[in-house]
Image 1: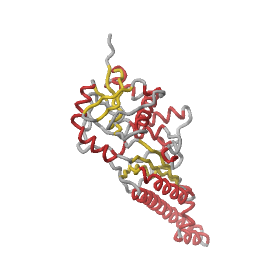
Image 2 (image 1 turned 180 degrees about the vertical axis):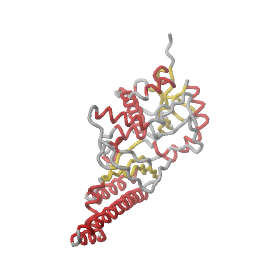
Image 3 (image 1 turned 30 degrees about the vertical axis):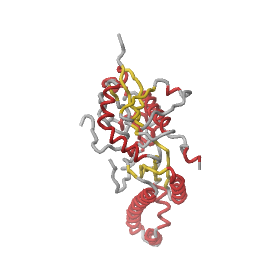
Image 4 (image 1 turned 90 degrees about the horizontal axis):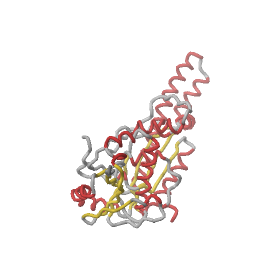
Length: 71
Length: 270
């Protein structure tokens, strides 16, 4: 049972960014920042990580389920 | 010139955590106590985290990587021993006193949230779908599609052309239906084993850097005693879905980023 407390595997940077930048309690601190351009950071990361590798063309529209984002 | 400092808030807990001294990241962390709560903070430079500089730094991917990872690691350190309320990246205060004023305002609510989170942890479940693989599976799984295929084999080229088109449409419908069914089924089954559950925005391929499509991005607040059952269910679903083109990815335990919503959410810049 003890091993269930350990992360199931090496967690990707994406998983961390998806939470740290998008979730967590939002309070109006004294210094207000807007991390609204998160998608741009992701895209930039993609460029960063794949370096010169040619970007794959977008293939078709993403499949979306009937469920909406919770918040 | 004296460099101005800001206070970066990572998380709020019920009591002061004991952090391993050996961890390099704990060096400049300190704690601010107020109203029976403990805020885990770090003193950061204004010329790095001030409003304008922060905006600039958010465009610097190496900087974002380093600091987002640090944010996560610090909170994970703290949550080893206790319940935490994780804050969003870049929650900054001018002074300890202004942080205390915030704790004064939200103290009761934070205590309520911490009480609710006791003995629970967040798990993330993402499902990806290899649509081509699912289509290949569906062709043999759906009698309606098999019938058209048989019909095509015995048809003239002209008729076969239209039947092929019909088959493709039907196949697209079937795969879409299956994607919805599987993602909903997974979500509902895991929700049954959780206290709370959330569905988040799907991330596009450019972000996930995967060949297959994300079809579910969800988070669950699971009781520590139920984690074993939860993981068993994930493993069962994994086995069940694998040959159909679905990949189930379960991560955690995470700080409860998805389960700390304030009732009177103040949105900056709103």
